[in-house]
Length: 238
Image 1 (cartoon, rainbow, N blue to C red):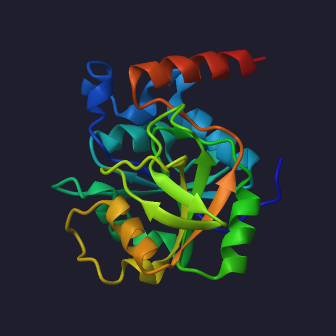
Image 2 (spheres, rainbow, N blue to C red):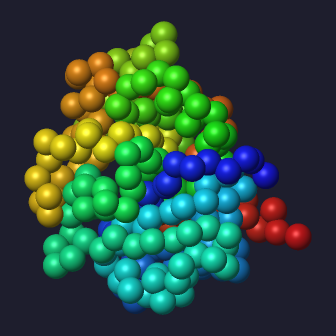
């Protein structure tokens, strides 16, 4: 069990999860059963074991069901709060912008379908030492677990592009990032935008630090990823 981290985590859990239909037509992705319990339960247990004590769930599609089942998070040893998209889906960036009053001056961001067994304390320490307004964790993926999308060289993120692939992209955005609140100042509230847009801007301005992690990532946003994660978590069950 890691020492407590005072930095909160925003979990982006507001998407429609179309790749997991028909399962997600009636329940949100966070409640999809994995190894005998809702995926969010596994996420929260992992986060607590890594020192996280406060989580803000950015929810949209069927988010009320998550709030009903997980309440204030006390059953998982964390303080759980909710930020709802409202009448329209705000995208990954817009959801973070809306949640800023709950998140405060600095915060982690991860996706609602990601299971990331990294050392969160080390990532947070690095972020604070570097002093940049944003930090992306990267993994030396070599195209193995998903399509690589980062050029990471000499400890710096040189290129981040999810659309235009380059042969020198050997790394991938691991899915865990850190930001300071002012990063989102220039974006319009309650207007949809993507977190990749925010990161791309920071890369161009040389304001996005890069931290390499060595533990592979897992996801349950696709049927293949869900099956793989099910196998992993079943093997860890007592």
